[in-house]
Length: 79
Image (cartoon, rainbow, N blue to C red; front, side):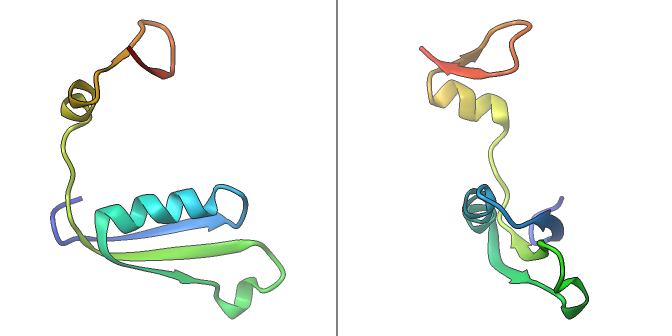
């Protein structure tokens, strides 16, 4: 995704929704949540994000926070 770009995300409303919204808010200028009338019987919603702000590479974020990854383990750990 290039700087200034747009992103559409479809998701099921649930307990992780505020975390995903906070993440998107930190990466885009504007984020709107939309629940189309056609989805009224489901928990399906959409986030429409505009103005991608960019981010550092994961490697630089991991180094700056003193974090490492163990080979074969799918989790990040602080030292």
